[in-house]
Image (tube, rainbow, N blue to C red):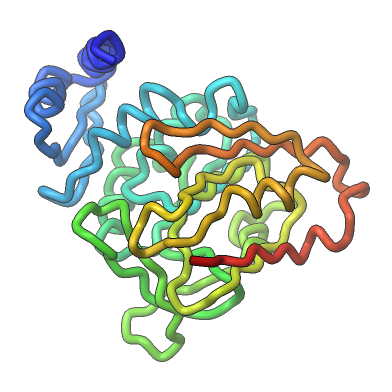
Length: 272
């Protein structure tokens, strides 16, 4: 554990102009509001919100969603649902500026940071929109469920003021203006007003899971995901250091024409 921390600190110093400050904040267990790349690009975060440094280590340095699994190709279409302030979207876009990334950030408290960060870092590769992923086409509000800026819950309410569009998985193809999606990152909280989530689409390249560790998402998702995806996908599960959390990687092993028709109406039952 000590060696891992030392390596993380060394990587922060290597990859970021303000690496010394980031290391100091890590040692003191204090939040940071900004990372600065060596070319001067700033990636900002809501002040005092916490979580930025941990996400930078996990996604920028350790490549938690893609290591040994995916590398963006020329012309590849990548969807980042639950984009937060854009760390993953920017990081993967910088791996290959000739790919195309669509970042969905429905929480208005973070969206202005996502917008500004993308504009500074990679405006030609990443597009963004304040859209939430849900059970169907609707509108709703994404609200903070606790103090960290990473924990939100979607409240579907078409009549709510300042609501944002909600689309099912099938709607992402229209948003991406694409027939195929090369890589889909799904790291979202469940809608609070539904007991079942329905997703449609031919493949789930990646899914982050949380098994009953959040007040806003007490669902156990790993077993249902594994059960539904195993017939058509190669599955790899990478547990995180936090109990009940991790990354499920799913690579479709069938051609699109061979995917069963009922795969387009997946139902994952949430339970206490």
